[in-house]
Image (cartoon, rainbow, N blue to C red; front, side, top):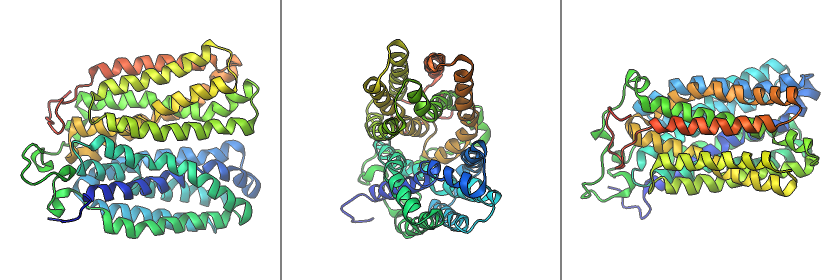
Length: 417
């Protein structure tokens, strides 16, 4: 048994934080900074330049469905190291690209597969396997890496683009991924039992801890026929559609009500900042409170933020207040999904279930932004879209009525749901 004064699981949380920091911070969060480059250097249209994120989302969802089950059976460390190496090489190859299609293949293919292998899916899977009683808090801390990456890497990449150039910026992103690899090698282990430990760092004599081996893994058929799977996938799917649509349209909406772009940019930072807080707070609460009730609370807060916007004549301060509430509640989605999957299916099947949820929720994320754009184009206002958001959260809340999770952490059965 390890004699380290700090439970090794917390080192895994720290490295998982860094993995998500780089995985999403270097891809999704800074993508918009490269759009002018795609237009000026490669002659891409605005629509074409924005397709990269769509390609990334599709490839990540498809890769996740394959990688998820592998994470439950094979070495998570090997998968994450391979993913970081693939992403590093892809960014470096992008720096020497001469054609737009080359960037599309590398970003929408290689980077996407790499992120699926070492990003949120793998990082949260390994954290979930190391924690039982404190799973919500641990996953919440690890998940903070994604919004933190957006906040901190965006100005750094922007500086590199301005002072050195886009090719050098991409080389820098690749180098950051290479620096992550030794940390993954040292820290990541599949489960605490591999190091003679128990989940949460509990003493060996603690018989209240449910070993992962005590809960058999769910088969693919069992996952897809479990009501809990569909309640979770559909509930998180509709919430994700709203989050993506609002994030994509908060700047255009600001312009509609007369807020300059330079001031409106603060809304993006505000969403990211409060999402970090929401991730941590709701993650900690998930260890102590009913997960379904917390999901309802998150949905209610997000609906209230849009109800407020459509009920008053907004200005900068009112919109900022709504954005802060929305970001706080939206930040809850990551840790609450992890807590719900861990509670409903057990850590032995965590990667499989999370990997399968991605393709189910993908259509919602795809439809959200263009549908909102269509509403704005046809009505001349975002108010009907906000009304639709409120209805979506009401429907999502009703879907969650069917969710049945064990009251005792780790008490998982295949009849749950």
